[in-house]
Structures are given as C-alpha cells and as structure tokens.
Length: 317
Image (cartoon, rainbow, N blue to C red; front, side, top):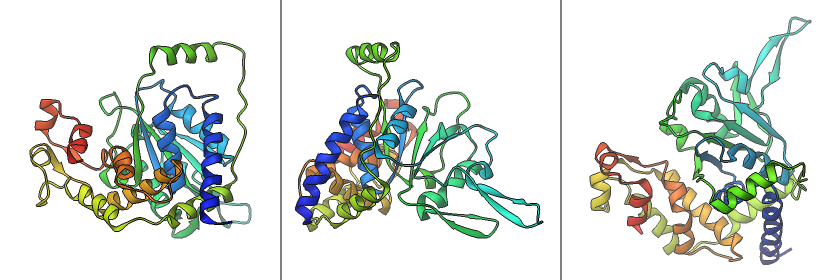
C-alpha cells in the first residue's frame, strides 16, 4: 500500500473514530482533536479544567474507541510510587516475585495528577520517556503503544501540588477544556439523565496505532517549516536574541528543544488529519498553543497585568 493510500485510509478511519467518540462526548471538539493528535504522534497529553467537564469520560471513551487496554489511577495525597509501578513480594517459595502495577497498560488515565506529591508524580517520568520502568534494580519494558493521558485541576484549587517542570515537559500537549455552550450543556443533560446507553465500537487495534505512528513519522517536512518551528520556540526564551518585547517583559523562561521536536511531529499529524501529505507553517501554528503553553513560565508582572500564555504565543506568529 502506498503512503498516499495509507494517509487517505487513516483520514477515513479517524473521521469514523470521531463520530464514535462524539456519541458520548458532546462538544469539546478541540480537546478530542488534540487528544487524537497526541496518540498519532505517540505523545502524552495533560487535560486541564475544572471538575465536571468530562475529562475522565473523554479518556475512557477514546481508549474504548481505540480498542486499547486501559487503566485508571486516581492520584491522591497518600498514593505511593509502588501503587503505580508495582512491587516485589515474597512468594511461598521465598522468592521475590514482581506484581505489575496499573502502569502496565496501553492507556493510563492519571486522574487528578496534581493531587499527589512530586515524589509519586515522578514515578511516571521513566515510563513516559523511556516506555519502561525500573523496580528494585530490575528493568521492565512497557507494552506499546503506551500513552499517559492525565487530568489536572486548576492549580488554584485546594490540595493541589504543582507538577515539576521536567514532568510537564514530558507531556506533548496541554489541553484546556472549557465550559460547554448553553446548547451543548442542554444536550449533555438530556443524554445523561435518560436511560439510553451508547455503545462505542472499537475501530483500531494496538498494531493499527503503531502503524499509524510510523506513517506520521514518514511524512516529509520542508526545511523552511522546520526552521520556522525552531525559530518560534527560540523566540519564547527571554535571553535569546530573537526574543520579542512581550517575551522579555512577561516570561521567566521559555521552551526547550523538546518543544521544537513536538511542534514538527504534531504538525505532521495535523497535516495528515487534514488530508495533506506534508505540513506547512499553518500546521505548526495550529498546534503551537497546546504544545508551548505548559513549557513557558510567566513572571509576576504577567500575572498582575492579566497577560495569558496564549496571548504571548499568538504574538510570536
């Protein structure tokens, strides 16, 4: 099968997949699109929003529609790293046996990830980066494909711990979920207060997703598009020569090289979803806000003057 045929086939399947997801998820088009893009790229996503916006339901529905193994971990202040990774126990033969934790699954829903202290949050770092875990000096590979889709409550809420910058950088996208419109909320209330049960059809297998990820990486990118993405990330660094006045005034620090890599990978996936065979600068811009927004840190002046991260990123275009 040629790459062109493969792209067309993938676009067709993705459109059907979105129809399946929207049987359960009302609205939230952007959140669904970016979640699917992260899966096509093999990246992780952070879903941010107040409680009750269907963050958990979205992850659950996506995993069901993709036909993948799914585990949910509820992050709480007393959660330990071993509750995520697993632990060694002494069996009846007095031998240590490793009991796998919930991390050994295709899709991990890290629910309310910022409700647990940094020590436990850090248990995910190796899994997210290396697709493996180390317990008691033993190395265990995770089954592919592997994604962490984490939900986070706004940091101002009670009982939350900020995620370490190193961990935030492991997330490809940060997806902000907004309140539904009046019409969408009416549809949500109608569908959730009746006895009608929606069944989700599984449209992909684990191997299909691995093949789709390989296809995305094969998509060619023009040098000027790569240079544009790298320059865009460079502009977010306050000490860089390319930094804009807004960046120098309102940012403490900018994004690192992982942001440039993710911009190009996401632009490839965005182009494919639109039926294109190579990304352009518009594709880079389309994915820039969810890729950069959790990688740049505002200063107190920006907070005081009500300057948002999105405002700063849009000014770079």
